[in-house]
Image (tube, rainbow over all chains, first blue to last red; front, top):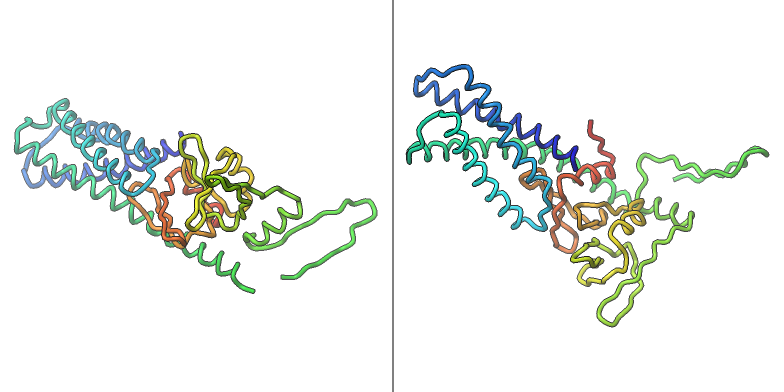
Length: 143
Length: 148
């Protein structure tokens, strides 16, 4: 359980931080703003903080797909509010209706990026497992 | 499959060696019965007491301190703890798939990924059960997939 938690934490930290860097780089390029190098450390720290509930979530047992979906919805909202708190704490920009909307969009992009990355890797694993299952039980059926 | 019976040296004790690519359920069942391991289970449904055949069990589930064995469509209560069933049926094709479930791999039709590293097992009776991320490696190991 603990090993699983730290392994997930590492994966989510890397994925979230990478996605946040991409979003930040895109935003800075488009807006033409300059920022201090301290922002990089802030991104790393925020990546770690937002990876924590994600790693915790994967360790929870959901009895069915619907409960899992509900957990992910709660998780998304949690990440969104944590991000808003971090923005306020680091003073990245002022909290206005427009900046909240932009943050929401950024969180959606990062969220989709992280989920899709994990899903693609899992899909490959599942394909191999299905192949092995098929192999194993078709062997059993042989007379 | 070849069966070879050799005579040991006078000072050696009898030994059974199985050489195969991956042991299937039939072979393991045979070895277990050879070792006389108890795979018998008694199930309770209302007033009925039924002797269960583990081949027909799709999965075991613990729910509010009670453990149930799920057949294709029937459900029987089992008077054992989940960890006892895991110990007893683990050497067969049963694998822990979540804190509260043990699934019979032979009854899995196919697997599909879910977001968050969990998987969904589609069983041959059209039921779906979730395989928790922390137990996926158990299933992989049973299938002979070793992670680095």
